[in-house]
Length: 628
Ligand code: GTP
Ligand code: MG
Image (cartoon, rainbow, N blue to C red; front, side, top):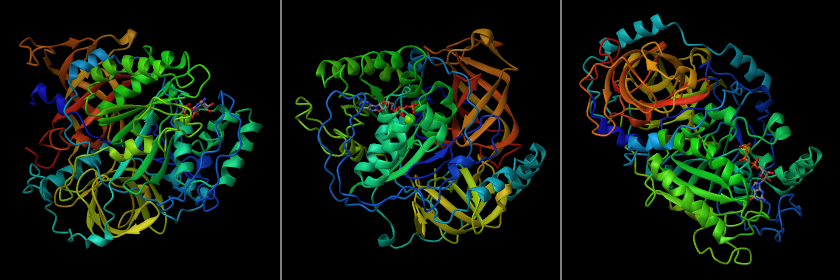
């Protein structure tokens, strides 16, 4: 059993999550249905999506509703980087879970989520140009395979055990697989680091506006498109939302001015490549936010400085708190806190307001486990006006800020390197048919190149890598941390579901129906205040969303001494740390946290509330490849 101390390694991102269209694309999970489903309305991903390319002009003469003084147009330089392009189709939005109330910072503080083991990344995001029509996608996605029965998976596991009995899974410092080819010559590899950046924070803080502005400032959206959005937003009486429309692509989002599905887009600087994940702030869509954050390495926590808005987001039950906590649990260790709406009339770029927010936020973020000295940076911006975003702060608006702009701060984030030689692990977040089966996900371990032989777990389908796409480009090789689309041969699209993992053949990921985990219980539901055997919840682990049940409480850990308590434990309450046996109803792929943190950490949610965070400490030997 792992030492409770090893909570401190609860870092780096597991993952999850699917997509949508235009500069931004969307994804969501249905917590109750781990199979894929596409959102037909979001599948507007076709070459007709917003015109991209550099535009040169300034911001249209838009008199922002909430803006005190509108500055002159933001001058745009020709982009030194290649344009990012739209993304593929999107799965359907998940049914809103109920509010995830406050998940107690104090409790999390006890977890010591501290030292960052490996929120590492250097990779690339991929898109395919070849996406089928919306109706095709929808048709296919309706067929989309549910997991086959648990029994079949266990059978598969048993085979797998036999196949892999001799594999040494403990050592993943070097890849085992004989199927692996040597990496391509350096000129074929884009050496710029790639980062997955999730924008989180309370509803209406300005996340989508900032995402849209980033794409605009990096020449991913042209002037005409912006003007179209401006008109559209005006028609909907949401004038100030036009920038958010770049990220909020579907009708519901635009009509309500609220992000529902995580928007995804790409942008680049000369130094780095980025995937933006624009999470919804509304409490009903926390599961979607979890999907987005679990794919990210870096978080931009957006805070509205507007009078009253910071306060609402930061109070108990506000999503500023919940998102910051969840992001940390999900492996986001580096956080930029963008204090937004500094242009608002109630703020007027006042240093006092910025300082007040920083002062109040810092102890809380520390309590969440962030290393606030090293890994958290505050900066003032105006997403709507594009100030202190690409270029440094215009002193005309804010004389006191000498720090970096948002782009500079993002460029400066350093992620620890990942081992490209580890056993291949890519949890799948989405799939579709396109001249074969195309799967999407982020490489959590190892690397991939065209021609590799791999296995999809848990259904044990042997596949060959036909094409690897990163952004819109076909590449022959991709490193860990990259977001990819991979065309496979040897498997039907309907035989793959979200949560499956593309793995090394020689060292496939374990498949389990139960495992032991150490849990930090957060705040339990009022009417379910006792946590005991029989407790049912929804497990979110990498791209898996699955119902689970607590089978047995094995040991309670004293949160102070971090030592196991001697007394047998039958139940615990909010705040406890406890080792439990968890059962899932469908076989899932997981790893021990200590081996692959990204694939071994999870959250338990119940009735829309995050009730516990946990890590996998032991896998049953009977149903998995030999692991211990
Ligand atoms: P959800 O997706 O619903 O969580 O909201 P969000 O955080 O994406 O906020 P969104 O970008 O949709 O913006 C909400 C409102 O805040 C819109 O009216 C924006 O115009 C406004 N807003 C965003 N950024 C700024 C800013 O920098 N200054 C001002 N004055 N208003 C802003
Ligand atoms: Mg939004």
